[in-house]
Amino acid sequence: MLPGKLFYGNNVPGCLVLLNKAKPADRKNKILMIWASRHFQKGNPQNLLRPSDLMRILVPWRAFGDLATAQRLVSEHEAQLIREVEEQRDTRLADIEDAYGPVLEPLSRLQTELATLDALDLKQKAVKDAITPEHPYFHPLAPLQVDVERIEGEIAVAGRGEKAALKTQLITPKAKFDVARKKLIDAIKARHKQVARAVKDLGKLQEERDAREQEVRLAAEREITHLCEASADLLRICSSEDEARRYFTLAGQEEIAENEFNLNLPRYVDTFEPEATKPLLVAISELVAAESAANTSAKALKEMLIAAGVHAA
Image (cartoon, rainbow, N blue to C red):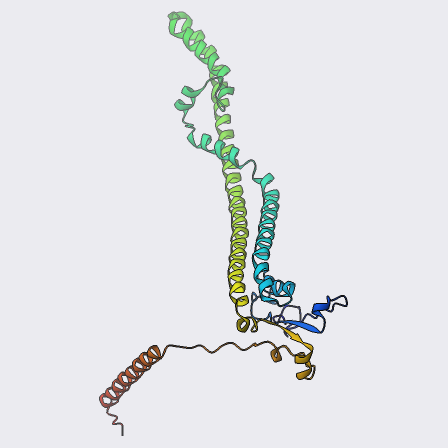
């Protein structure tokens, strides 16, 4: 017997009936009945059977109700299902990396470039002082600066009559340098905006990828935790015939005949939850506390009624 809402459009509990014409001789005229409706994950529109829930079915089914065999199978199924959960986790993580990896590959390089661009001082004097043929951004200005500095050097050592001509000669290369510098700075600023936007967009994608990977890891951890808990619970169940009968039982032909061949599981499996018990001293203590609280409330109510001019009989 399975939980309800496992199938679309059907809220009633499901029931699997397995028929085996080649049943071994020692299993003939016996029916294994498993009550598997207690453990599942609630969902909308469907409930789900988790790997731990499946283990609670597979162990008694493979053991055909034999408790000693079931106890031996618990660790085997636990290890196998944990491996499957880990394999599924690794496959999903690989799929996520395949989807995001190629897109995020430039992020590290762009972050380095953005840090370099942020560190640039684009003021006129700072640019002039930083120009070298090896500079990653200012190197196009190096030849123009050489021409300007050459003429400025000639002016510095020229006589009074030559300076006027050299200053006139300086106008054109200096203008070319200034125009090139402004264009280069504008291009650097545009590149900075472009790189900053790309880093921001890729950063969001990276956060999305990390969130999905974390979700997959956490889901796998939850499944493994459920499997470990179910394994411990199965060992507890299979260590007691009375407890095991609340989950599964092996019904013989005589028992089935006594029930007029009615295969309704609650006739064979104890499906009722045990009533919660409480130590007598605890129950007495709670009763005394409840009576005291009731008396306090009654006294407070009486005082409120008197204050309001209402006299209770």
